[in-house]
Length: 622
Image (cartoon, rainbow, N blue to C red; front, top):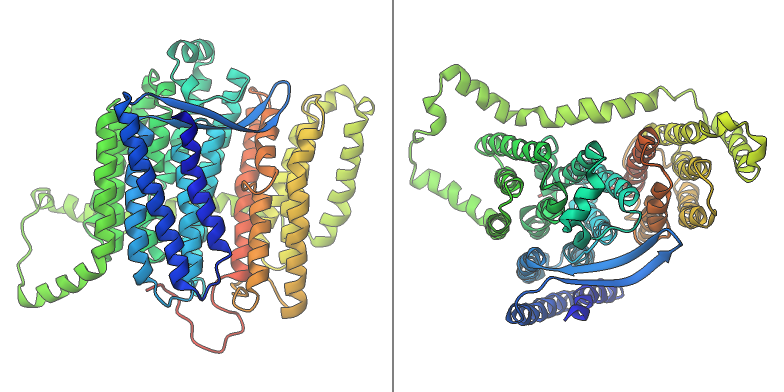
């Protein structure tokens, strides 16, 4: 029975690979591949589910492919199946099947028909990788796939300004969740000294023993899980991204932000519940966050003029209640609530265009005066204040921009003195000196060796901050992103004595994809004449192959699971000690800004309205 778990990963993987080679003009064949593969996955799972229930629904765990192994470290794929997985796969397979049928006709003759189904199948692969995951590393693979497919679907109407802008904004929030998972994995590795599985987290005695003298470290890990879950499920203070994600087509909106992807945060909290179950402070924080999110999101939903935004905030409010149920230990109720909310929001989003037309007709022919509501019982000053706050969406966008993105941009602008020639003629020789010192540590004073990891990681962070705010030279911005990875590797190389094979694995993907990305930018510069980063250029229309190759280069440099850098990032964090919080923070912050800078370069060069078009372009989605 356990060996069958691989099938539910291989089916969507095979469907995605097949869909890539189907010509874009063959709509029928493309939709049939998606329809048959998702339907086959659903039927196979229903049979497996009945078989599993008949045998007493045991917990299944399968240690599968070992990707990398050393004496003290092992990176492997692990799959798990229990009540939590069963519920998520049942809901996910059924809803994806229905949305696939709906999309076959909804997107008929759409320019991006093939691109849409490619991305939906990629999303389904990532979703199954997450819900079947038996350890954090396997979950992180699916998590990254969900993030990039989300970005591509929001920016589906890539010739319009607002969808592309909102796609970058949503990806920036996802990047915060990525680093939360990385930091949690980093500290868990130091606790257990191995690749920890969810099955091991359910061992109460083992967890208590490891956290006995590390109480605050346990709270830190739990809060990192919470930050990742809150970012993915649009809980406060990250709630504002979900309505902005509605810029994509209605089917992808329904499957992503109404039902499946937006509930992945709940899945993480359910999976890690045995770890933080006895941490009362963490449970209180989760409950308060869920309650606050529900109250605020409910108020915002009641004043929205857009039906999609109203559904989005209503879904956020319900997910807040699910977080409260998880914090209270009510797993069964949380799973039922998840299934009900997913089915309801998918239905609402799919029928929302029709509902709007019906309501417009109703207000003309069957007008009804406004009825008395709960808010009317409040004092008028309080009622009006609450109304204005909800109308402004509690300034959640402004809050994130002011306290998170503005400091990063402020720091980047303070680095404007780093002109191109200064970067090349100062940091490159300095890096070569540092590289020589790694292989000849005896020439470095002992007191300086302990400080060099912090110095080098700070230099990497400086470079990536400068890249994030660069507005003129796209190629220089790209080089600084690549150089950041090399400085991070150099910092860790001084941190402890180990063979450099792991660093070579980390940098191999960065070097190869970095060269490919630079070559593409060079070719675009030669053919178009300008690729500055102060506007969107939309060159994917004229150069679709360059756009695809550059997207792959971006994914490789960010550590997507097509590159050795994906394993390398985990290896790098494994060599940062548990007491080096500052070094871990600098490294994680550089990874956040690194991903944002890379996506910004891709979006500015290849997405958005075409810079040379003489025709009027739509700036908002339909």
